[in-house]
Image 1: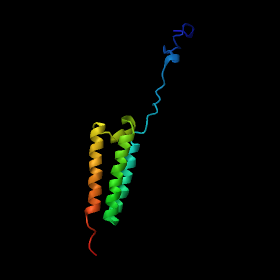
Image 2 (image 1 turned 120 degrees about the vertical axis):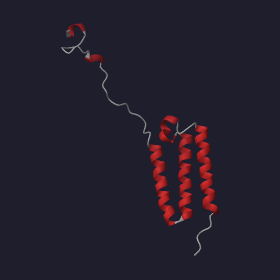
Image 3 (image 1 turned 60 degrees about the vertical axis):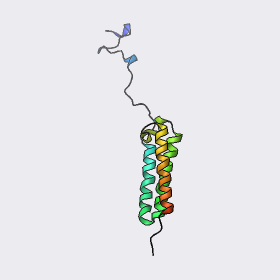
Image 4 (image 1 turned 90 degrees about the vertical axis):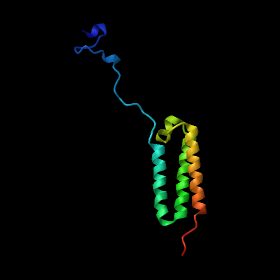
Length: 111
C-alpha cells in the first residue's frame, strides 16, 4: 500500500485515523469519599480525647456525606452512591440524627 492512495505506509495502517490511547479526564470518583473518611478519622481521634466532641464531629462528618450525596450528581458523588439518592439521603440523615442525639444525651463521665 502506498501513501499516494491514502491507505497508510509500509505497515498498512492508516495513521491519520488512529485514535491515541490516552485516558480521558474523568472526575475524581474517590474525592468525596476520601474527604468524608478524613473527617471521620479526625472525629475518631477526637473521640479518644473527648467523647462528646468526638461524637459531634462524627455526626458532622456524616452530615458532610449527606450534603455531598445530596448536592453532587451521581457521577461526581462517586463511591458515596450506594443505592438510590432517596435511600442514601434517608440513611445518612437518620445516622446523623442518631449520632447527634447520642452525643447530646450521653452524660459526661463522673469526675
